[in-house]
Image 1: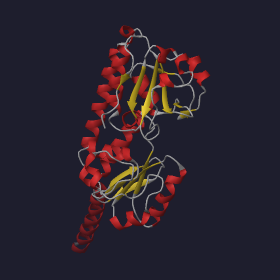
Image 2: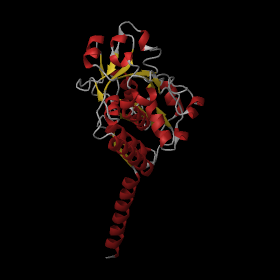
Image 3: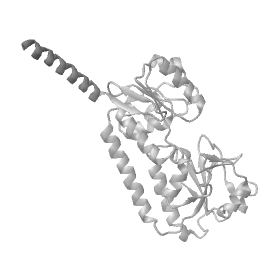
Image 4: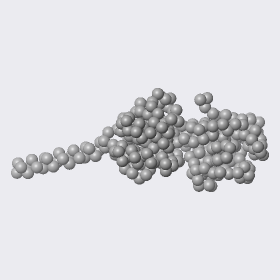
Length: 310
């Protein structure tokens, strides 16, 4: 009897210890469908896509970041960190030497996943996300929150974002939705398509993307296609993809566009509008304000700039 009790006690302790280990493990499924499990919250993180640095900073844990890619500038605290190459071609040897306990990458292009496989083959934990929609951004924030031990903060942040966006949408209910063309790049004109997070930003702000029906991230329209849409607003992003767009009024034939002729064009920062971070809520708020004032503009305002002073 005593031996049975002893064996039962050992079995109970074994099962209990397994349950504790399972409960303490941090587990998510990334956007490849791969299960990522950490024994403890990540404390040495390298993000190979800059938006994830900003998400971690929004969760109040930017001190967990130990390196950055060459192009990354936000948050400002990462500027002092070592550079580990580019988003597409990170320096794998340097990453290994920094001994991260978590690496984050976006699914973006196939080339970006090659170093991911190399790092995973060496035993590193790599989570890959594809936040190409607002809902996708929410789930990315929540999963990163779990991996860094800040699940509660992540939930609060997501709820705050949802509430702010819902508040904006209530204000423009029943109002006319202006048509919008969003310029991603010029020359070799590139615009935002229906599968671009910018499409949702425009819609949540109360507008209609000229090319929302094109289910691609980017569209390559000729000027004739943009003229056919006859946008009320022409929005130009400025940043790494569109470094020097210049004044559209000085471009060949662009004055044929009513939005350009009437001065209803905006210059906006690429990082805020095209990068999937919590800052997109500010982008929606800004655009919503411009759209709601549209009836008062009547072509008199001229250029409106929302570009950061950076």
